[in-house]
Image (cartoon, rainbow, N blue to C red; front, side):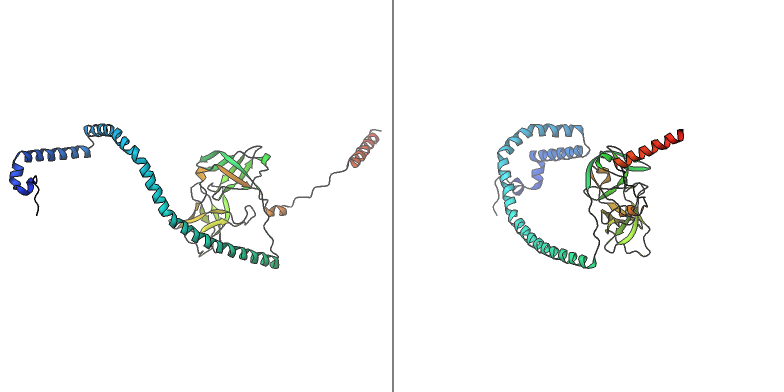
Length: 313
């Protein structure tokens, strides 16, 4: 075994090492280390000031050293990116092949569905337009959950129109002005929306209670509802079109609630759907009488004048 020339611990006994001058120096250094460690743990100002001063003194040197090493670090990141790019490309190619297969399958199913619709004479849902506006104010209080849009009757908005964001349904138009409209949010205490729950389409009603997660009510007995089931509008009542995304079922101490997909506290731009409810055809409005022609109007005026002159006589 090779023994180093300056290896005092291997050449001398431990007592001689600790008993000499070097032992005293080692003991002092150990004591100072423990003292600095204790002061650092208790957050002594002297240690913090020393640490900051040392960092300020060393930072220029570290920056000078890091400056020529920056291109090497960028080169290393690029090499790592190129190394992983091959695996990523192969994965994307596999996904593209799978998506092409699903695309052809989807086209085939669409064709079959169209043929079955023709045979069954299914009435298709009418399409609807929309207009996008920006949320300019929100009302949040103990008894109200609503927002104000910068679009109104000039943009053909009407009370009852559904309002959606990029994530899903947020509410409906409550009332309109010339250039503004107020939207009642799903979380409002006065909000009641018929919904479908899960793949089985269990019917229920989404009820707002001014909380972040509206409750599910009027569920059938022994309803098969699982946590995470998607909730969409059912279209019952004709107020909302069928199939608008709302949220997912969550458990709240044995009661079912819905975690909304749309973040009602972070609304910016929303869209109002021009959904004319088919139920409006059953409102029983009287048909409007056709307007009279100009000749008929003049004849009526002459008859009225003759009748007035006869009464005067």
